[in-house]
Length: 126
Image 1 (spheres, rainbow, N blue to C red):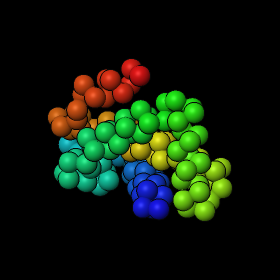
Image 2: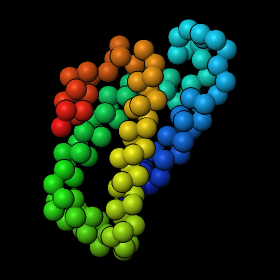
Image 3: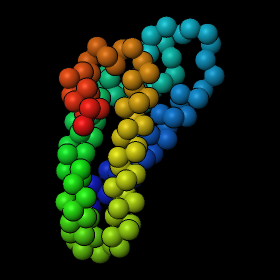
Image 4: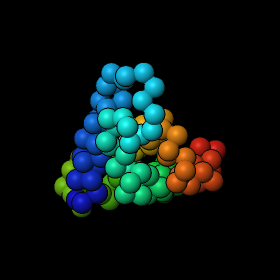
């Protein structure tokens, strides 16, 4: 249940990050701390960017095998008394929203200073 709530929160955070990216820019605004991208700034200041990358990578490893993914979804749907389709939609939304959040962060050069580059390359290559 906690995971489902986290997936909902992640969806809201990713939506905010996308909106911030679409805000009008005043030319070259310099560093991330001089722009209005509070979501990405929070990820970097609180050291959460690598956590997001690790969560996405762990998720990918756990769901790469379709049979394993199906088993996990079935188990979660039984525990939460939800339809498997609802759980699968939430699982897919989690992956997409985590990717959006990381994508928004990678648009700022500052994110590269703390990002686990080897893990990003490994994740991208799998």
